[in-house]
Length: 341
Image (tube, rainbow, N blue to C red; front, side, top):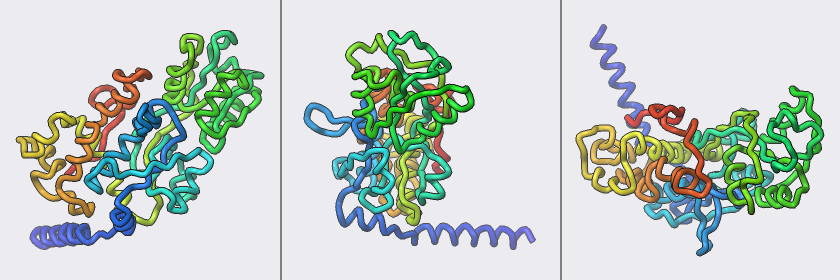
């Protein structure tokens, strides 16, 4: 009986291993034929997606697109960035105008199930907050009764705000805005008393205001906003490629793989996890329809998750965000990727 069970398990495993090598992605074929990835990004949002002095896109969300292009096309520059608003981002993904969304999109059941998308992981754990001018004398979201509030349309923030106001019996005047840039301009022009959005975005906005010290991000966080890349449903292999590229950046931080040492470690180490990830042992790339060096190239672009976070949002940026929930699970946060085995 034990022998038959062993044989059954072996056949079962071999069948799935064989099936994995036969996986086929129409999206991957199209991307290779076009020789670029069409990446849907935020309208300009400091730290996450913005252009530098040379007009090149930079930011936390941009770094992921670059890593994905390196993994798939062996060139981080082979990305076409499609600048989208909260209102038009989902139609753009549904229609095929973009191959993937790499912006601050919250994972919800409506978007995952009803709209027909696949979220490939959580890249940033955030929550909705508020920013206001100190001159208003408001220091808490509980004091917002009667306030005018700038809010991005087509986002989860609308419903979150409505729920928060209903539970706390607060009345407010909504000032609907379509893009981050417009919201910042409206807030600076005092078209609204307060601006509400994801807390990380508010911190980025505050850092770019003329006098940041005159503005206060309130202490309350009124929602859960798990942000991550998403693709259309129906192409599991493309979703797997996008998912495991994100996972590779997170696992690289955990294993101490950096932009500076990834090429050396790719030659082989005493750690089998590192060897599997970087391709010196096994061939996990083949399961994805990629080569053995796909993760090496992804990490070599801007480094691991920590390096990307610090450069664009954290200690090496003007925004200066703490890692918080986005620290690795072993460092007091909740961030980790599934095992690479």
